[in-house]
Length: 220
Length: 220
DNA sequence: CCGAATCTTTATGATTTCTTTATGGTCTCT
DNA sequence: AGAGACCATAAAGAAATCATAAAGATTCGG
Image 1: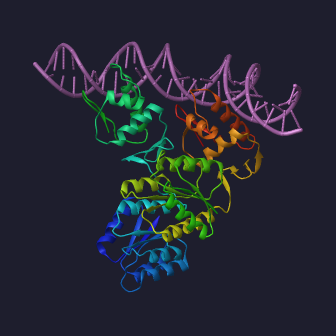
Image 2: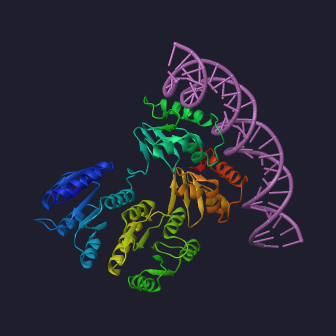
């Protein structure tokens, strides 16, 4: 998933690039309309982030040129608030319109949205910790990309630990949260399940992720 | 192109309806979350305009329910400005987010946008997963091109699973979504129907598509 | 009202998962 | 270093869950 950023303000451009990279996209920076168009016509991209206020060529013109050649999503960023302008842009083929100043998280969310819609399924809402990745919806857990099969309680336990990395959970907490039952006195149950999870992770990783904290509980 | 409006404020609702009608869409008004859901489940729509601040059922809940049953675009309208909320909604499946107060022209432009986009996708009306293909309209399901005859509940179940591939549905969810009744305690009903669906698929395919996830539910 | 199709319940065997038990190791505190 | 508390793991028996067939109940069109 390659995204072309066209934005003359260096600071904003960098922020966008960083955010995109962090979210797992490949981001290419350009700092003027002409540079953007040049890159667009010589390289392959899956999406364009286009600032409207550009020196030289106007943003609207850039949008038009891009749309003439391709049908990839173009997300427009602009401080302009006049409705006419917005509406025109959207009609001209912009996929979305984001008003400056924007929150990077919203930009990201909208990018994810359009990425999903355009069929490229590169974005996931996985919970991850290092080599461990947990997908709630499909109830799948993988280690270094290898799916491991966890039972219900194992899944709940690992999910909890990954959800709050470093946090130490007492056995009581683990039991009550993963079992949704009251914890009655000490038994070995949680230990056994933790042990089983470790064994399964060990198949695909050399790191011992789940650590015991003596007298307290466990953490990842 | 039928659009469902869910908005409790009568004035805004009317403005939207008028704008949509003027732009050549067929607009259906509803004034609460429950009414919206009711209409949604009994009539056919191509898009939903959803206000977030609803009396009774929360907008977020409405969005979720709609997305469980169908994949049509949902445009969310809201006065909320908190980014977290926005981002969550978009991730939850909203197709767009429009902040109130809005300009009708912008709303229209965004609707046109999504109408166009979903038009591209509705070329084929079939839901498919590998060898399995489901046609909502004709209520026909085929495996490798061979039509199999499913009963009402079987159809609903399989449709759900295919609509969200990989997602694990609990028996409760399956029952409530496919039966549209409350799930009371454990019985074997869902199991039996799943088993029957499998048998029918097996006639024309060697793959076991519907998988049980122990203690959780089923997924395709 | 009958019959066919569909749905639910019941029954049973198979499979998976959970808990308990047992044993040995590790850590902490004095 | 030694005692006691705690953790790790394996293994086995117990419990829960699933798969399927078949029987009984319900629904619906004619």
